Image 1 (cartoon, rainbow, N blue to C red):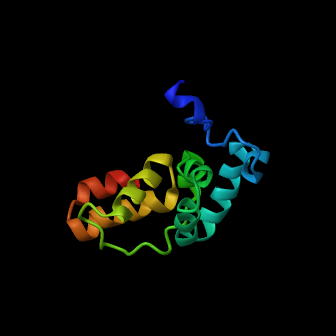
Image 2: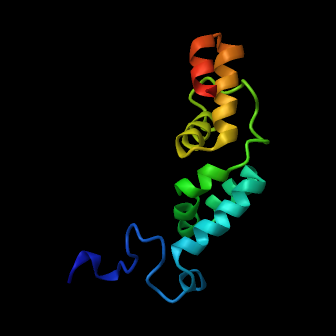
Length: 122
């Protein structure tokens, strides 16, 4: 008997292969829902992410990071390798204007990199 015969989850698809309620909608719809949640509150986005694998896949999308709210992140308090800093970098890479502004202002004022901060802001 094959070892993987009982494993019916399709890896990387974000939707379980069994007929559960989460498989009724495609991942694209879940990403749109996660983007709406993330644009309101990242705390709720993280709660959604911790709920199940489908939500985990949806919340890791670039579309979600592009619109995520920065209001709940502390300002200038994430220089170590903390989760907030990684989240901010992902948002900045996705093109989130609030994350780009926050990174530029942090570099300019708190870290003292005036040239790097201005390059980020421009």
